[in-house]
Length: 296
Image (cartoon, rainbow, N blue to C red; front, side, top):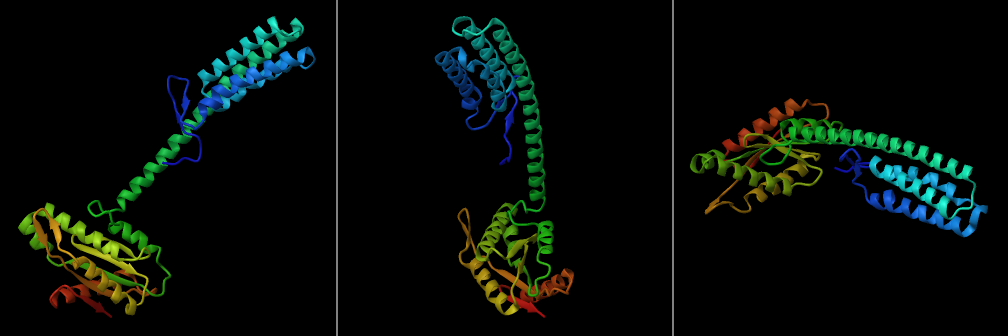
């Protein structure tokens, strides 16, 4: 799952960010900032008092680190300012005390800000995970578990997005000899047989064509093409299915499908077109199977 915001993993109350560069930004950069500020103050002397800039270091750490790390950075900052004031700085005791007090207050605020940020990021992560879970559940509810194609529910939803197309064709495809395969080799082999047919059908179609498992040994295809162009497409699909026997262990099982094709004009209900396609499918099977029949 990709996330638009930072991802948080809470650990031991301090929290850590699974974020690129969080260690360098939350720890190394603040420590380097302390050294840089104190070094500049030592070089320039009491005229500039760069040491006062140290108050921003804990807040910077709070942006990238958890509360525990931020507290440590705040403590290091305070101790550095104290040590520097006692050994190097020529500033007044009053100014030194004021700086230490401000650094302490800012450090406490930084710890609180870091904790608040982690809570907000954690809530965001939970919301993203819930959204991803809902999307995955929805996807699974619309996908056939055996073949990975759309199931009936997914097909009906997807077909709703084709409304408005003037030329559409509905094709019902039935595996000709699945019952014999199940009776002779068992349903596990039959499932492998169905999966092989589904794979060959789906790879023979264009990306704009809609295909799914309608139920049992039947597949449904929606083509956004007129009948004159749909027939050749379905003939190629049948040829792809029959191109090679389906291999199951030592067995090589021949395979063929029958196809029932019907128009689905924009003004016609889907149920009407499905009934016509089903009638065409029965006609194809009655005529000897392994063929395409078109019902006008």
